[in-house]
Image 1 (cartoon, rainbow, N blue to C red):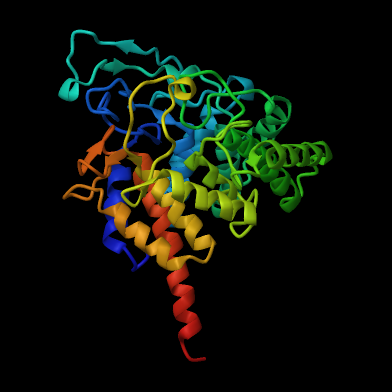
Image 2: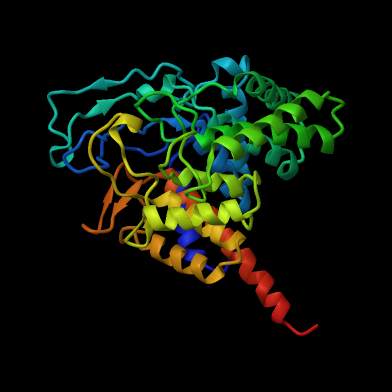
Length: 386
């Protein structure tokens, strides 16, 4: 456990532990439904389910914290969830593995502070989201390192995901934020497709699988070239939310976080500067500026807490350590008096928004804290006399 931010990290780990459904090892995104992202608005969702994206990122946080039993149980749940045909993989499931999560509006309920509709179920379960395959490949690649267990079912799942992505990556999708507008070619989704192929190739090479991956290498290069060509806007000196668009999106931070490009690449530096210019609000990061023709909904929303912790990590990768520490300290102040984080925060109203407590926010905090602690330890070692 890192000494830096130790109490804050432990508080988050306790929260994550409480969100785990012990019989299956899965973790709910939040134990609540329909707490609004916009007070009085329609951005109200049921989060009492397990997202594969959350699972992949949470396993990393649990491993860092040496909670190997919880990490292993969650990983086992993920492997079971994605068994079979990758084309049938959903982005989310019930905590017992339920596949059908039909969304229903409870019209007779007024909702929190008049925020209607109140929803049970989540229609996003049937969406196509390419990013989930990148996150699954990441966790399966990392599991091979941390658990030292190259179980056949996990290896089959990883290679199956890569083979599927190689045929499906050109399809438009709803993106990481589950847009309710039309499907598009979201830049972060294409980067995630590249990541799925990259980690499968690296796994095969590092562990001597004997799996032919030349075709995957070729497709990985095609994706890389297309993202750099179609996803980057030279006039803005930034990658954009989707091909041909001009909007920004915090999910573009996945470009350096996944290793698609180094954090010091001029295109990444330009993208971070654009995010700072367009999406920083009250010192914290919006995930995007809502546009009804993109996300299909009206109203504004608060800053997305996990995105600020992503930016902390990217700052650190860029060598901006002071900015990383400052942003981390600002982000943790969005928690309540018990250290619990919601999905979003309203800097003007100084109140939490969205479902609560939010696993996504807490494991993003843990991951960022370990990055800062590691950098602090390295700096201390450099200053120590030999």
